[in-house]
Amino acid sequence: MTMPHHETLPPFPETATALDLPGPCGPLQVVAQQAASTGRVAATAVICHPHPLQGGTMQNKVVTMLERSLRERGLDTVRFNFRGVGSSAGSYDGGNGEGDDLAAVAGWVRAVQPDHALWLAGFSFGSYVSIRNARRLAADALISVAPPVGRWPFDSIELPGCPWWVLQGEQDEVVDPAAVYAWIEQLPSPPTLVRLPDTGHFFHGKLLDLRRELQAAALPWPPPIDLGSTAANPSTP
Image (cartoon, rainbow, N blue to C red; front, side, top):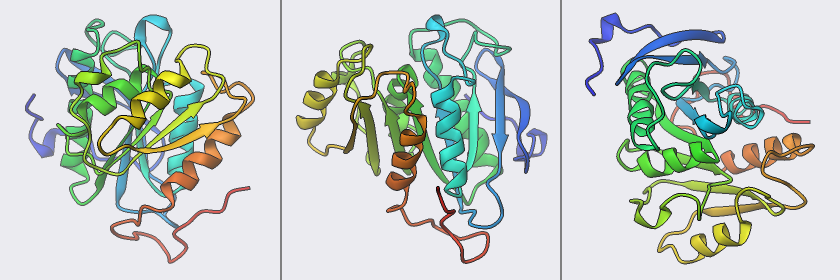
């Protein structure tokens, strides 16, 4: 879809702000927030939520931990509801229209933050949508949490050409970890795989472990520009 003229788009907010952005089916419900000025880098992460028909929303606790972890790392962040979720217009479209929703949000980020690298991240179904669209959207980095291999057609995906991390719980009761590992092993340019022991699909009791691993994964990626002070790496407990 064509993004409206830059002057008609809301600017990227400094504090956590709910926005309605133009999407393929109508408004998309979005929450965006800048990282703290100290350590802020020229990159914005767009985060995709789990399956809309199984209760997935941008308020999912894994999604909110993704957002928090990356923002603490210095990235601006965007969460949004796919079509038919919350106040986002439209109805579920099996991953196809949801990819167009992601493209609309990414188009807004590129319009209002033209000097930022675009990172994509997703959990479960959201990781399928973001992986599937990473090359199309020329993503600069990709983080996939519990990609639902075996539940969606991953074999036909055009793989991303950017730095890519996959984080997978070893006791996932929804996504078969062995299927994820086997899929990664046969890829010509496999992502970096992070296995989380004793961790189920929803990261019950393991969200701080996820946060630690997410921030460790992000550390090797040098920020294109440091927009804050020289303290580019926020401390973690």
